Image (cartoon, rainbow, N blue to C red; front, side):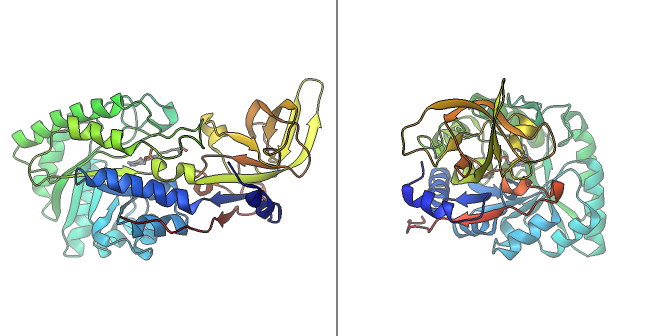
Length: 392
Ligand code: LLP
């Protein structure tokens, strides 16, 4: 819900832009860190969800670590003050240049996704006379029951090492003298709203934990990934995730031994609700079969609806404080692609050129997935004034 003051401010700005509610961001991060602290869990923020500088500053100030998937993300994390011993580097295709830079930065650990990668990291570390800390990303074959484009923990996905390859991993680790095995890493998918999925993950991790114990390989870190979903349908009434229930599942079902650390890599749940994409109606095109609302934002600013059929709550915020007739519109962007449609048949107040349209819950995988297709301008970011919020 935006105040009349917001609307006045937005009307004076060039659209489209991402609007960040820094107060909500801070509250969300605090809710997460407080819930995790009860169990001494370590949270890393998945930078891929949003590497906007203000977001990174907020995460870093809250003492959260950084989960990176490219050399540039590792660099950005360190430049934003994340301590190198809180930076992890995952990804199926780390280049030699990226591995070397991460070795130079002495990051906490590499989450390794193949036996071949273990050998490459070992060789590059040896050339520098260093030892690289590694965690093995295991594909747990647990169904995340989410959109198939964002499922990662099934045997048919490219991520992680399958359990039938673990003997090979063991053999390789024994021969790689410049690697220090520190633990195991799992991630089953994103936008998971059914907590049963995490319970199933715990069961699987416990089984694999036993296997490592039996091989005499000590696990120091159990990294269970991220994936906690958010409520895209109720951005105002359900704006902060239930971190308490999420961590409770792990506290009840994950077997952790004395001295072991449990790590999480949350992205979406920490940032999604804190931003909206604000755009303006350029044209209202009334057809015989359809009414189109043509916006000045399209798939170049927010691609999730087109890529994953993702739902973002769409609001005509210029009309939210007035009485109106409701009309069904296909809400589309200006890009020369038929797929550049946010959603069809959206019931909205009768809209006019110049009205402000908000796409809610766009803080995760929104701004960072913007593209320059059609030689579009880079989307701008606008921030609320942060209120004083206690950081615990
Ligand atoms: N850890 C790993 C290894 C991951 O692959 C991901 C996300 C995360 C953590 C963070 O997951 P989260 O807590 O944000 O669910 N672009 C898609 C989502 C892709 C997620 C990729 N991996 C979307 O817009 O829905």
